[in-house]
Length: 300
Image (cartoon, rainbow, N blue to C red; front, side, top):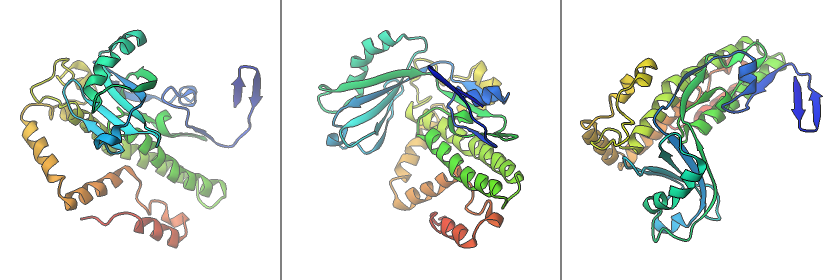
């Protein structure tokens, strides 16, 4: 592998290459691995890092601001009042245009007086729902954004990437040390892609719909109308939920989630993003496998 810096170049010899080099992965592209899925066609996301005392106004570390137009995700980054505020804009806006309208948008997001904030960073990007056709090709392996992308509402991109890396580290260690066949990596590949398609992809799309109040009679940009992109990529089954009839069901869900038992049940469902605790048990210490399983919540 050739590694180049502006003033330097080196050749690295290695038996395995793990591509964790982001959504525009060079490792994935050079390996000829398809990146299947689609790009959301009708909007871009703006991610800002902002200094503002959200917690003074009752905000928790992670917050959804639900609205058909002025929706936002507000998440605490550090303990010195630095927060990530992400929201949507129409595609094609320049950075100058985004910055020009930012004060008006922030009036809708910021609690309290909505003044006295400091923007440290503001970047726009297109949201995607994409997954590599395979996570392993020979001695090349993909993880994180190099392997899959989803819209960021719900924070499932980073979470899924971490849940790629942990099991991969254990499996690759077992293979390199000679304690397991390299077919174990094929099993990891298959199971992680299954988790993305059946859990991350569907949940992140539903989080997006909920945050934007999709179809609740307010859809000025037509974001949730059925379109060619949705039909081509098999999204109709998910987008059909974005209609006025589902508002009553959404509100019933919000009410049900106020019950502690239901909250625990939902937390258990999140473990669907992870591999089973015993997925490679035949190559691990039984006590380690048991302890890993004991750390997980009991299903209700």
